[in-house]
Length: 170
Image 1 (tube, rainbow, N blue to C red):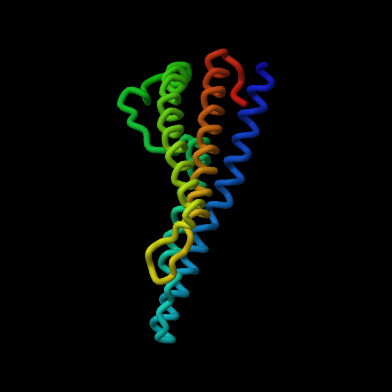
Image 2: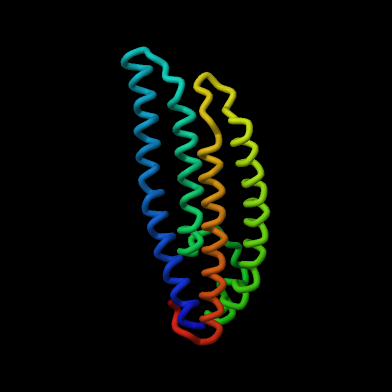
């Protein structure tokens, strides 16, 4: 059973790394889209309808995809007035309890995200703008990333349980 837990934690850490590595390049995509917008407007005098919303969708995809990597690296914001003073075992105890609050919150967001995605698919929901892109693709990405974050939270819980059992961190 411990080998299964270690394997799951390693798999999720690698998956979060790959997804985070991909997300890293979305910033360059967003910069390129915004540069196209500026050059098109200032150099050629042509205003593009798609660039601003594409940049916004790219930024949204970036922070959705960066979520699992942020959890994996423990680089998220944490109020650690007392946490930083605890040892490895104390932190593992606190994390193994509080991670379930995060899973609860993400589960409610996932439930709402699935509901919103289903609505977007049924109604072919579009943004009310000149370009009018469909919203289903970004909502699908949000749902997938929320599911990945829940799976990463389970890996964090297992990692903390392994620490509490004085096992070597996977």
